[in-house]
Amino acid sequence: MHHLSSILTDLQAAIAARAARDRALTLLLVAVWGRIARMRTRLERLIALWRAGKLPAPRPSCAGRTSTAPRSPRMKFPTAPAWLIARVRDAVPFGTQLEHMLTDEECAAFLAAVPQAGRILRPLFHMLGVSPMPAAVRRQAPMPAYPRPDAMVAATDIVIASGPLLNFSRA
Image 1 (cartoon, rainbow, N blue to C red):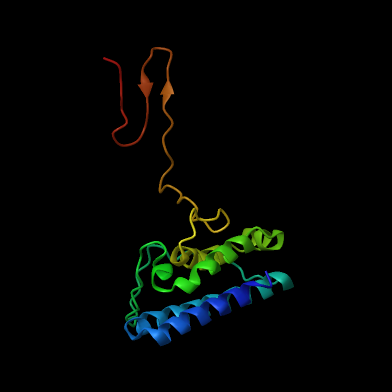
Image 2 (cartoon, helix red, strand yellow):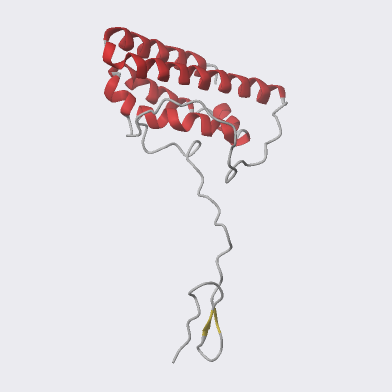
């Protein structure tokens, strides 16, 4: 866990070196550099709170809510897996170092206790092309909006089910 900050700092240095050499990529790489800086800051804060035993209470989900406040336009990052590796070849070892860091017992305990850390790391692993995605940061399957109806077989061989389009019967 203590190497996380140095891994992300070194990754930022590799990105900055590439941005200085290639003017066509400078805008994109400066935005990525800033995003990784924010990831590092958030992770360092969460690690400090976790070690102190003072994790914040989870906030209610904002899924499905609409915002009325105008938002400033955000930088659109590429979405292809390993897109950062394709542009910054010096970033290749950092994905492996981060993946190896997840095998540490302390890191596994941290990610189990603080699921938002996995949500912070997931885009970084995607940028660096780490596949398959480590289980500690893999997105959990969403819960269905309604429970699946269970079909029952009655003694008369009639299948009884509830829910839309699930009324089957033997003719």
